[in-house]
Image 1 (cartoon, helix red, strand yellow):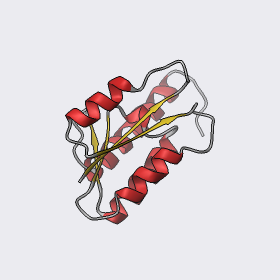
Image 2: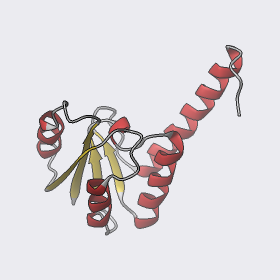
Image 3: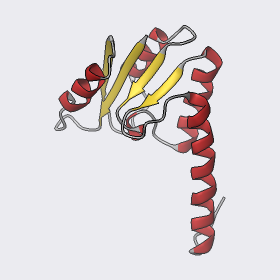
Length: 124
Protein backbone atom coordinates (compact mmCIF):
# COMPACT_ATOMS: atom_id res chain seq x y z
CA UNK A 1 0.00 0.00 0.00
CA UNK A 2 1.42 3.42 -0.90
CA UNK A 3 1.68 5.69 2.14
CA UNK A 4 2.56 9.33 1.56
CA UNK A 5 4.72 11.53 3.76
CA UNK A 6 5.40 15.23 3.39
CA UNK A 7 6.94 17.97 5.46
CA UNK A 8 7.00 21.74 5.38
CA UNK A 9 9.68 23.56 7.34
CA UNK A 10 7.71 26.56 8.56
CA UNK A 11 4.13 27.39 9.31
CA UNK A 12 4.25 29.93 6.47
CA UNK A 13 4.73 27.18 3.90
CA UNK A 14 1.75 25.32 2.50
CA UNK A 15 1.71 21.52 2.27
CA UNK A 16 -1.07 21.35 -0.34
CA UNK A 17 1.29 20.79 -3.29
CA UNK A 18 2.92 17.82 -1.55
CA UNK A 19 -0.47 16.44 -0.51
CA UNK A 20 -1.80 16.72 -4.07
CA UNK A 21 1.30 15.04 -5.55
CA UNK A 22 1.12 12.20 -3.02
CA UNK A 23 -2.58 11.54 -3.55
CA UNK A 24 -2.00 11.80 -7.30
CA UNK A 25 0.64 9.07 -6.93
CA UNK A 26 -1.98 6.77 -5.44
CA UNK A 27 -1.25 7.19 -1.74
CA UNK A 28 -4.19 5.93 0.29
CA UNK A 29 -2.91 7.66 3.43
CA UNK A 30 -0.94 10.91 3.56
CA UNK A 31 0.89 12.18 6.65
CA UNK A 32 2.18 15.77 6.77
CA UNK A 33 4.48 17.37 9.35
CA UNK A 34 5.14 21.05 9.93
CA UNK A 35 8.59 21.09 11.50
CA UNK A 36 11.91 22.78 11.04
CA UNK A 37 14.88 20.60 10.30
CA UNK A 38 16.27 21.20 13.78
CA UNK A 39 13.24 19.93 15.67
CA UNK A 40 13.59 16.38 16.92
CA UNK A 41 10.00 15.21 16.70
CA UNK A 42 8.10 14.46 13.52
CA UNK A 43 4.95 12.75 14.75
CA UNK A 44 3.42 12.32 11.31
CA UNK A 45 6.56 10.57 10.04
CA UNK A 46 6.31 8.24 13.02
CA UNK A 47 2.69 7.48 12.06
CA UNK A 48 3.65 6.89 8.43
CA UNK A 49 6.40 4.49 9.48
CA UNK A 50 3.97 2.63 11.76
CA UNK A 51 1.48 2.36 8.89
CA UNK A 52 4.12 0.95 6.53
CA UNK A 53 4.53 -2.26 8.44
CA UNK A 54 4.17 -4.97 5.78
CA UNK A 55 6.55 -6.17 3.11
CA UNK A 56 5.52 -4.55 -0.15
CA UNK A 57 4.19 -1.36 1.45
CA UNK A 58 5.65 1.87 0.10
CA UNK A 59 6.63 5.15 1.72
CA UNK A 60 6.19 7.83 -0.94
CA UNK A 61 7.74 11.30 -0.71
CA UNK A 62 7.82 14.12 -3.23
CA UNK A 63 11.50 14.95 -2.62
CA UNK A 64 14.21 13.26 -0.61
CA UNK A 65 14.79 16.32 1.58
CA UNK A 66 11.21 16.04 2.84
CA UNK A 67 12.03 12.67 4.39
CA UNK A 68 15.37 13.11 6.13
CA UNK A 69 17.41 15.84 7.75
CA UNK A 70 20.88 14.50 7.15
CA UNK A 71 22.67 11.77 5.29
CA UNK A 72 22.90 9.75 8.50
CA UNK A 73 19.18 10.17 9.13
CA UNK A 74 18.35 9.06 5.58
CA UNK A 75 20.56 5.99 5.88
CA UNK A 76 18.94 5.08 9.21
CA UNK A 77 15.47 5.42 7.70
CA UNK A 78 16.45 3.38 4.65
CA UNK A 79 17.77 0.60 6.91
CA UNK A 80 14.50 0.59 8.86
CA UNK A 81 12.46 0.39 5.67
CA UNK A 82 14.66 -2.29 4.16
CA UNK A 83 14.39 -4.44 7.30
CA UNK A 84 10.60 -4.31 6.97
CA UNK A 85 10.60 -4.96 3.23
CA UNK A 86 9.06 -1.51 2.65
CA UNK A 87 9.93 0.30 -0.57
CA UNK A 88 10.79 3.98 -0.75
CA UNK A 89 9.44 5.96 -3.69
CA UNK A 90 10.78 9.47 -4.36
CA UNK A 91 8.54 11.11 -6.93
CA UNK A 92 10.86 13.81 -8.28
CA UNK A 93 13.79 11.43 -8.74
CA UNK A 94 12.02 8.30 -9.90
CA UNK A 95 13.73 6.19 -7.23
CA UNK A 96 11.52 3.13 -6.86
CA UNK A 97 13.00 1.08 -4.04
CA UNK A 98 15.18 1.08 -0.95
CA UNK A 99 18.01 -0.96 -2.48
CA UNK A 100 18.49 1.52 -5.31
CA UNK A 101 18.05 4.35 -2.82
CA UNK A 102 20.87 3.01 -0.63
CA UNK A 103 23.14 2.60 -3.65
CA UNK A 104 22.53 6.19 -4.72
CA UNK A 105 23.21 7.51 -1.22
CA UNK A 106 26.56 5.74 -1.20
CA UNK A 107 27.39 7.27 -4.57
CA UNK A 108 26.39 10.71 -3.31
CA UNK A 109 28.61 10.22 -0.26
CA UNK A 110 31.57 9.40 -2.47
CA UNK A 111 30.90 12.37 -4.75
CA UNK A 112 30.58 14.75 -1.79
CA UNK A 113 33.74 13.43 -0.17
CA UNK A 114 35.68 13.85 -3.41
CA UNK A 115 34.28 17.34 -3.91
CA UNK A 116 35.34 18.44 -0.43
CA UNK A 117 38.80 16.95 -0.83
CA UNK A 118 39.27 18.64 -4.19
CA UNK A 119 38.27 22.04 -2.84
CA UNK A 120 40.34 21.88 0.31
CA UNK A 121 37.43 21.57 2.71
CA UNK A 122 38.37 19.39 5.70
CA UNK A 123 36.69 16.01 5.75
CA UNK A 124 35.83 13.89 8.73
